[in-house]
Amino acid sequence: MSKLFESASQTAGPYVHIGCVPNFCGISDVYPNDLGERMVTDAAPGERISITGAVFDGTGAPLKDVLVEIWQANSDGHYGNDASGFTGWGRQAGHGETGTWQFDTIKPGPVAHASGHLMAPHITFWIVARGINIGLHTRMYFPEDAAAHADDPVLARIEDKSRIATLLASRADDGMYHFNIHLQGPQETVFFDV
Amino acid sequence: MTDTKGGYMARDWTRQPPALTPRYKTSLTRSPRLAKISLPSTLSEETGPVFDQNMLGPLDNDLITNFAAPGEMALGPRIIVHGHVLDETGRGVPNALIEVWQANAGGRYRHKNEGYLAPLDPHFGGCGRVMTDEQGHYSFRTVKPGPYPWPNGVNDWRPAHIHFSVFGQSFAQRLITQMYFEGDPLIWRCPIVAAIPDRDATERLIAPLDMQHTIPMDAQAYRFDIVLRGRRASYFENRPEGM
Ligand SMILES: [Fe+3]
Image (cartoon, rainbow over all chains, first blue to last red; front, side, top):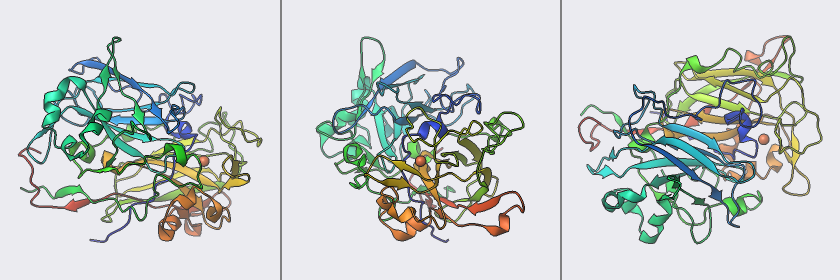
């Protein structure tokens, strides 16, 4: 088997919207809609949830040009397009003035892991933007699943337990999950070398 | 067990840009500083969104006409960009979704944050997409983008380039990169290109002119192959039944 080398990554740059969410940036005549803008159909089983947040740089400013993708299991813990039309994949651009984004989705079920343990319900995040040379992988976990977190084989890999908090969303009075990602600083989010 | 797919091979960080590359100034405040947590791929990374050829419009892979008014075409040198999407084991990747974006022939993007004085082309949007065929091949038609200045150093210019976003068969393979053009003297002066620590890895982002696929009296061709991460072969993966 020949061994090739993965192509080198380059930053998505400030104009990533043109290619990935053209309707969002005003190029509305080419594709009928932006891929990933709608993840859930009415038929999809599971608890409807919304997740909002922003990605912050080392000065504490939100990234206004960020593009965030999420990938998650359905409510049964299975990945991939299911019969209900739930895709599991979402893509949103940060708001041009505030940097905030929002995903309307369903809560994923726990997913099997090679160790035989279940992974606690989680959503994979992939973050690209100007100034980010290679897309960043992280995960969001749900605050109500503390018991499952104690047994999660991925969280177990984080030696500094105080950093696990950076992967936990909080649920606010508005009913939404809030999940802020910090690229640097005392609250730097845990990123994974997958 | 008959499963022959193991986890993803570890990323080769000698060929990928680190997060912090000070000559590219924006990376200073947007680079994580703590060590990443090593995560052998799980089902969450070994799966990914699946796209369908049927979602593509007939002009999606033709940037010369997909934004133009009826009967009009974008200005600039007409080119075909084509290539093979493979994984690290050398297998073609079928049904990979490729999204591209670029400046027009004058080096100007159609974007509200764009500040370059070069003019917009009323018949050029700058986005396109295509999916690979059963063997992993793709092609699209566009105009050659112009180089453009950008606010980094006092006098930094981006070499002509096309941005590529690629979905393979899993989220672990997700890749965004840029294609450069053979012979462009700006490539080796660019702080974004220079973020890549390996010369060979950089050269593989430079598409050669491909006279064989040029269409006489119509369009030049450039070849750009893309390699996505590959999985280890494994007949004895310790997986629960049904995985
Ligand atoms: Fe660019």
